[in-house]
Amino acid sequence: MAKLTKKQKSLNEKLGDNQALYGIDEAIQSLRDLSSTKFDETLEIAMNLGVDPRHADQMVRGMVVLPSGTGKTVKVAVFARGDKAEAALAAGADRVGAEDLLEDMQAGNLDYGRVIATPDMMGIVGRLGKVLGPKGLMPNPKLGTVTPNVADAVKAAKSGQIEFRVEKAGIIHGGLGKLSFSNEALRANFDAFVDAIVKAKPSGAKGKYVRKISLSTSMGPGLKVDVAQVHGG
Image 1 (cartoon, helix red, strand yellow):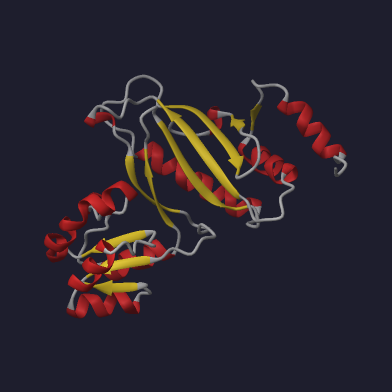
Image 2 (image 1 turned 60 degrees about the horizontal axis):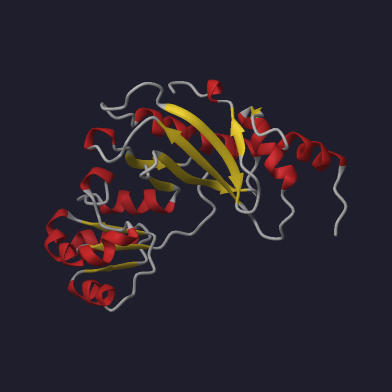
């Protein structure tokens, strides 16, 4: 078993205090110092919000572009015809089609991170509701994935745009990039993600909105971030 460095021992002692609060930059650096895996871990965020998503006026959902990217390659499928199809391909879509793409997905070929459609294609896409819905891939106008501007939507998906959606317990999870990113790049992604959540505050939210924030890595512990450092919470 590898010996712990002085820095890791110090961090482990601090981790023994379940109430310890970390500054944002301190949490990012501490998780980096604690990481000992051989793969490039993802920095993950969990936010506890003062909402009950069972009520429509307390749902928190949307898209945010992480300025430093995600560190992942996103496969994008687009339902479009003619000029729109050509534009989607030129923008970097991995697969573009209509009835042929419908049949392909019905056959179980769903290895995509984002599905986009032009409005006129929703008659076809609607037939995939039971297939795409459970995977969170159903195109949605509110999320910008049903749009006549498919080229822009493809570019956004490829450049670090991610979807967020609050879960039943009022928690939102998200990936903020890889530990191979610089601390500054991860901080920029953190700020963009939290800012998007704050701006998405629903009308039905009561009391304190951002209640808790924790950062972790794929294999690391969760560190509580001082919410007082987050503006607009």
